[in-house]
Image (tube, rainbow, N blue to C red):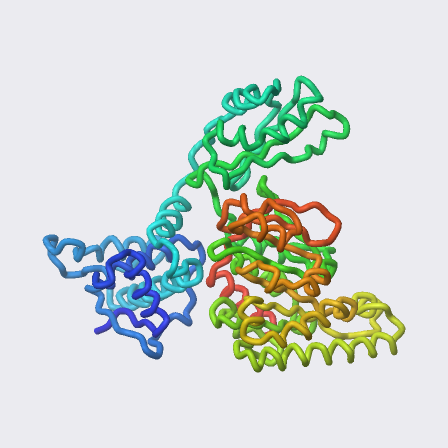
Length: 508
């Protein structure tokens, strides 16, 4: 009797992981156990829709997962069944050792956890990235308490002396990845020396050239010119992740915020960062593969979906790569009820949005209001906001350059009628993000990129080339404001599924 059923995507994930481990012919149980461990790290139970079998999948006996009935001399194929039962019993607070019913529950929960773990791996790891590093960070670094911070205060003061600066440390604050040292300069004229010597200070502290120290203008600087703040990156093993559940709390508990408020993450000290997408009014999200770009998009989308009903928000999701946005297929907010993946459908949808923009423009004029926000507040216009997400702008334009024309028209005129674009790309270059688009998309989120030139394409300034990856970002939601550093919320497929369940529950 099979204990676990998979579908075709699960099987592909198992294959990819075995290749990522460098052991393509190894037993699949290795991946199944890794998936189980990954799921058990998530505090919410796996959903019931992971029961049953799927197309193109396989069946696995219990012995292939937990090793039940095997002797101790089978190498990695040993009997861990009692240990797994104990883990699931504690996790679900149910006895899974006694009787037929407990056996059925055990197998059912085991299937859900393994399949959810495979989904999490599929969402958060790319087959062209090092799986050993991913495994270390996901299963070990994030699973243990953060080590106590090693106080670098004396080393920082020594490094400052090397560049001719005498100073004192007035306090230290720790965020998810950064420690902020508040520095008091003995000589007010040493500020420029600090600014020029940040690279030397980083080398003194043993940081790589990509892990630069950032100088922050302290809020006390206007009153006290000698005060500044240095943001010093900590070792990766001391980072902590901001879970997707925090995003849900911010969105659900928010009051008196603009309708299209989004939370991309937290600031360097761990406080939530939010902005109004309608005020952006259009946004470019750029970063290399593995920078956390797709997870950032998930955070923006869930910020809206946790709070807004379909009558207030419609989503047009264009995903030429057919990978990242598939989890949103069940949401009633989708225009046309589906994710747009085919290039022909994408062009038709963009042209349709241009027509909708013109229709709304005429409607607002007829009702004597300047924009959709004003019309909704006055009760004269009852139209939803429309958020258009293009998951990979470079792929869309590569397949058809014709897509640029409706995109430019929307960025030029759609703001007033409540249509807002979020354009994402992992190839930030002048060909992808042309001058016409760039001038009409003032909102920017830059995740880590390879070069300063790519940072300038996204932000119009350097800095993103020194980010730490994995969701580290520079955020400039509107033109004319300084870029702000933030760390992204970790959104997984389970967070998206919980949001979908909530949306369905609200509609019942």
